[in-house]
Image (cartoon, rainbow over all chains, first blue to last red; front, side, top):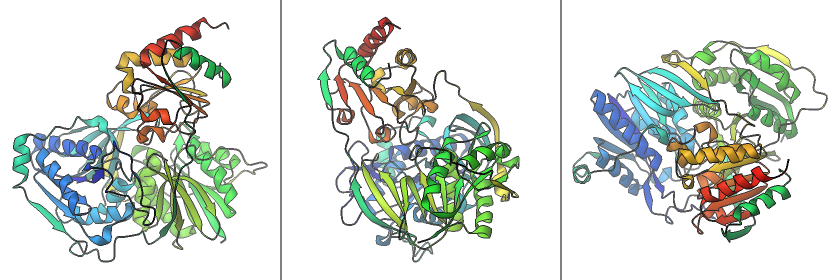
Length: 257
Length: 326
């Protein structure tokens, strides 16, 4: 089974993000960059598919040179090879541009399953997997909470607004996974050492035949970025046994009891 | 600028229009558009017409093709919408940021090569169509103008607008449309569907939400939340960490990838306050936080913060609520 996993280098989600006031782009210098935790789940899902059915996991990423760190971590977890699409012109790309670039990189070789997270931790437009599926002309089985395969099709349980549904999808398809599908493995020392000798390519948009794609989205312009109105911080007290009573007083003040 | 037709993609939820569609129709009425229309696909689409009309749709374009329920909605809905848009040229198509809304909007944007803005909170039409969207857990707001390319697509977070019927709305015109479905969509079929039914008010509608995070320690802690929520006639919520751990079903998740709630009182128990979570609850009128860690970011949002063990405080709260008269 040929599995492609899309990965992204993101600022550590445990630290607060910030946009540059003039360029309106994410300031990536403020937080330690890491492989998006959602993508670790994607890599794990891909590895489990190839461990059960043979084949290999190919990792595809888009980002600046240092996004190679995200690819490298996926290789250390067990992916066979990786490609990073990197190009100065891609800085600040929107969701649709991201999907176009990933689709072009993925489509260079045959694939059975393309695995993504449901959204990135930093940008979270939440529409890249679906746009990617459209560009690759395959079904998108999104928001998976459980994935099984017999080698020719996937059986996926997915979240819906009101519960869940089970989908049977013939390959090829795009699969977006929630953190619920698995517990990602830690790279072993052997995996980390072995990753150094795995193939890792860098390509430009021109090499993908995507001249003119990238940068600010052609159809839209950011006009301002402002801090949302802060909630006034209230009273913080140590629980001295009266905490529950204080909550009751607040509930009564809000007229809900 | 003058705005032509605005379309709202109306999802169905158990034979009714989903709340998000009614919210978007209500907002669409205020944009000064030449027409506000709803597009609704699914075997039960006919049942949704009256309510869509009451909320301001003057036309409902619908298909009751069974394929919309048998297949994943995203592909067939995007194909059919694309065909309709090519014919009728709406200026703007609005989506709720639900699972299905994202599935349809993402595919449609790629199909039409149309500009799309996600995580919208507000929209206004002046010299241009401008959407305000949330980033970094809604701590920062981005205003983005659409250029001249049409249609423009915008995806809004649930509860961005109140839903209200349009005074004196006439019954809408109904236009039945043929489903357009690319063959490859038929390779993915829904074989089973289940609905989680919770007792008490719906999470999105509850006046009080009692929500748990890692600090409630295990699935047993959730029982305590349920007891307290029941005493308050409220609903139980959960952080993503708790849902990922399997202590609570996804339908209770509050946050970026879950529900958005705006109750009168939100009680966050053992929730640190990651942006992923706070984006879904920062619109509550009053926020109470209980957490062991005095540095937890949730305290920055809280009207009342209690530094202590969530389970201990919840037990005392349950007991005090039980002992209250009436």
